[in-house]
Amino acid sequence: MTSPTLPPPLPSSDPAQPHRSADGWRHARPTPSLAEAYRTIPVQGKTWFRKLIAYAGPGYLVAVGYMDPGNWATDLAGGSQFGYSLLCVVLISNMMAVLLQGLASKLGIATGRDLAQACRDAYSKPVAMVLWVLCELAIAACDLAEVIGTAIALNLLFGLPLAWGVAATMLDVLIVLALQHRGFRLLEALVVALVVTVGVCFMFELVLSRPDVAAVMNGFMPTVDVITNRDKLYIAMGILGATVMPHNLYLHSSIVQTRRYEESAEGKREAVRYAFADSTIALTFALFINAAILIVAAATFHTSGNTGVAEIQDAYKLLTPLLGAGASTVFAIALLASGQNSTLTGTLAGQIVMEGFLDLRLQPWVRRLITRAIAIVPAGVTAIFFGASGTAKLLVLSQVILSLQLSFAVFPLILFTSDRRKMGDLVNATWTTALGWLVAIVIAVLNAWLLVQTVRTWFA
Image (tube, rainbow, N blue to C red):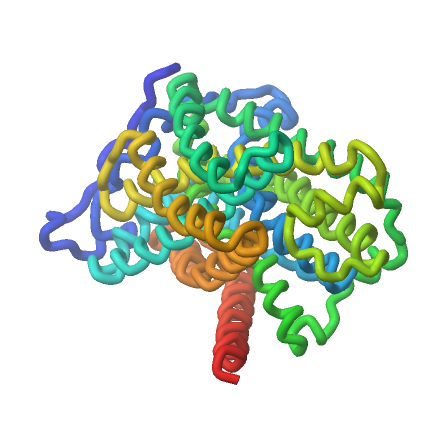
């Protein structure tokens, strides 16, 4: 692999007595996270298509987080319980994701900092530490979903008990370690292959389920009862948490810097355009998979009266009698591919967040073991004492936790990308900033409303 070219230090003050410099930052540009992959992938090409292929990759690593086992749980629950009506939430969440991931990639390209490094530079140490802890909680919640999803897939395919399946997920550390030593492009290729596997599996499921096309189209139209119905709102917030994932913003702002684009103003503008195209195409594919999961659940379970299917295991058992032989096996294979894919990108996100906020560099396998251990404890205890139903509830809860953490990543991202001193010519347009703040406020208000409704239920 080509040795990375690290960025030159920028003029700055003494870190012990930082002040705002002309570029809006307090410190010199830090050593990039994932330094071993920094600027290792060339992007030269004579045609726009060749350049698009060269830039393609980071968007798919990000999109993986939008189709992980947490999405499965929330989409299955929403489709079986409410039919097609929550498709509008899947669509709106994906549109939010396209905007926010575009801003994240622009931040990384324009400033040479990922979101974690930007927060560490822009805020006081106590504030940065709070943001770090919240982000680590989000990563742990995401990892919890991956652990449970992979354990369920192993149980469905090979009959491995859930508790043993949870323990077996520790082995994926070896996979990540091996891939990271063989180059970033190989890691991207594996992720794309697994994404395609999940997509093909759900195309098969869609054909078998034969959904009502008119009802599907109506489902993409928003309705007021998504907010007024507490049960719908809970699932909707779970879908939002599973779709727009906070740690993906940190991940994307770092991995776009693996491309060896020109550091000139024009080179950065071109990199922003292609990075946005890459993530938009990848997230459109994620939209198809998320919508397909919910549509299959609505067409197969809701219409047959099985409205209580909120567990992946129940969905697996019901698919064969309702759709025929092979449907359940394909379902489990897709789940396993989804869980393993999310594991790969979760490792990178954890490494980026820890390096960015703490300037602390650990071996990837050590970082992965720490994150995975945090997720294994609640997953293992739940699997042992509460069984399949307990793991299903924990899966949905993990996605709501992700949604509650989201604002703490979104607000700094919009602030940074709207600051001309920090972004230069790549600063957000006025309409982009306005749309970004609208998305941020909607997310914050819905989260607050969900929290109030949940507390009321607890004390009712």
